[in-house]
Image 1 (cartoon, rainbow, N blue to C red):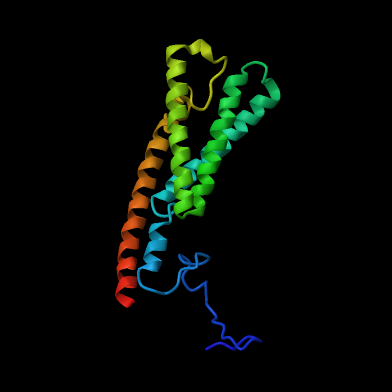
Image 2: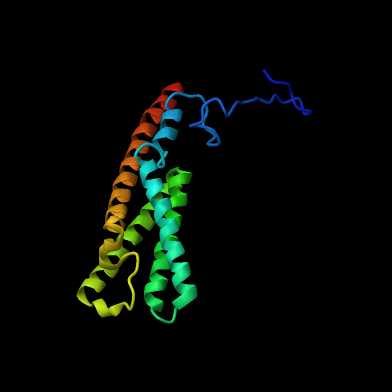
Length: 183
């Protein structure tokens, strides 16, 4: 038992570095809680590849748009603005994936949906009327300049986030059952 505080209440020391999967999450040592924390880690396992790809695309889209906007914005303002929007969406997804947890997973789900709609809308507009954009964007022709990864990335992200949410819910069920048995 740890030493008491000035008010006579006992304080308990915890070692948050003992299990890096629970560090900073407030997760105790009860069975099932550590498993739920790991299941909620959307940037772990195959999610690391998504994290890496979103990092690369954040840098690519934002740097491309910054150069284009600063040097020749008057040439194609819509295309360059859309590239900047794509970069911001990628950045938000990157942060959400790296943060993990249920709230971050929901933010990433919304952003991946927006990203997919953007890729489909801009891709279709460039196929139907290529003169609509004076220059290409990250999402032009469904991301053909980027090996169609901008089209595959949100679909893969949505599938991964859906799976991570399901795993987190399944891990929470045994935890709730054990809590009910203890009362």
